[in-house]
Amino acid sequence: MSHLKIRPSGSQGLVTRVTPESAGWTYVGFELHRLKAGESVSAATGDREACLVFVTGRGEVAAGGQALGTLGQRMSPFEGKPWSVYVPQGSDWSVTATTDLELAVCTAPGLYGGLPVRVIAPDDLGQEVRGKGSNTRHVTNILPENEPADSLLVVEVITPAGNTSSYPPHKHDQDDLPRESHLEETYYHRLNPPQGFGFQRVYTDDRSLDEAMAIEDGDVVLVPKGYHPCATCHGYDLYYLNVMAGPKRTWKFHNAAEHEWLTKL
Image 1: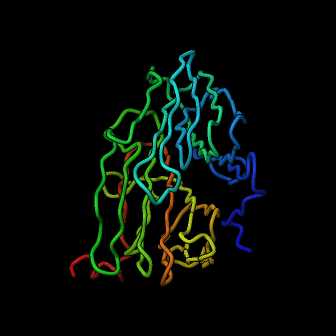
Image 2: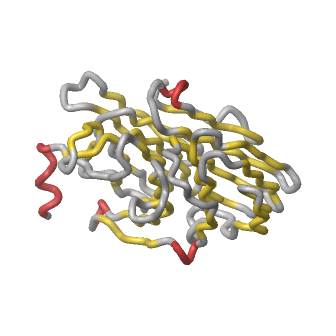
Image 3: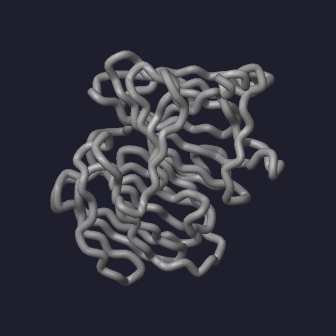
């Protein structure tokens, strides 16, 4: 199996954990918790900030000494927008599930920005359609660069069956602004129906990194550098949750030159 693909370690509790140390990089952390009603998870952010994304289900939330009430709504990532919570560095947080709950914990370094805890409601989230034809995908911006955070960029994407995504192939692995930014990235994948599969390739121009892998429901793919397109299969929609962070909080990407013509269709 590719060293860039992480399979869930079980079906309940903490099923996936990516740290800068385990990934061999500097910025992005990601955890996926699956809880039954009545179960809880809690943590302290320390010197990192966090974005809690309710992928599915509902739970009672407290963060930074505040009781935030019961959040979450959708029971499938393919239905509607998520609830999320931004938690700055130096804060404690806890979530107690009131239904079956799938909670993503996205983290990156805090920069002492002094930001408050905030609930990010579905109505706060912008959506857009990118691409056209068989390259159409539906994007929900959870924590885009025009919303306050120190390092994190968080977005979720639904790609209809038979379509490509993160395509034409693009990369963001050079600290060369304004042309390109350096951002590490994780993809958390879900399939609908869940027995499906798709494909993702991570590769560089010189092919010193070139890995293509089948992606199944619950897989996480690491993108330390290079291009990283995805493709779905007939009959199976693909959801993914992206977490990005780097030395500067901006998303400037570079398309693969040989595929640039696709942007002009």
